[in-house]
Image (tube, rainbow, N blue to C red; front, side):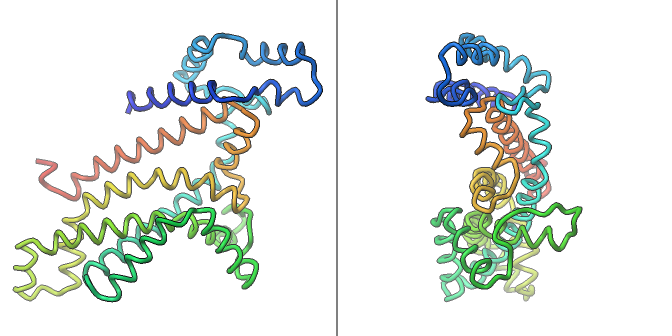
Length: 302
């Protein structure tokens, strides 16, 4: 984890500081003298050499300090904490629904391989993985919010204001965000299940009269769990990238919206802090997925 996070820190810092755009000019506004812009650059430490800025930032990062926003002046950690609930709520609801639905569809497609059900599931998987998140989001808004008026167009209601309202505002963004995730996991589940079902011990179990449902979920799915878990972990990257787009489309005041606003203002500390947090979550999830292999496959424990 540590080498990966170190590489992420270097890449994020260099890409941001080599990109065009000057935060001091944006903060100063229009029709401002070069002297005032230079003064703001000095206050923000942007007049220092890039390598020195990097060392200052890394030194603070190692102490748990993500820095202060150039635009608002507040600590980045505080800004992220304020926006964390909507993002965590969206990610968790999407993850739970997508994994359950995708594995169910994948198992169903494998059990009915070659049938109309199999073709429909795989067609949905291809479509879901091909259509961008923002397109799915706008279609869902047009159909279910504007035309049918079943669900709100945008916004977020904290869970403290009621679980019902909280879930109602998360339905459309969770579906939009989860489409690609469902498609990815369903395809891998189907492929892995077909490989397991073709094994000799599965044919033996079927010949002995083991119930089809028990054979699929207790025996085949358990042996196919390792590659599925790997895809679930790798798919967290889809969630992280999709959260930024989804929160923008549905006007959810989460971390994704925070980083979009920070990019528009060239607020380096916020962008760097959010990317480091997202990267840390992604690396940690994949570490937990690797550790989960011991639960699914006794050979890993051996």
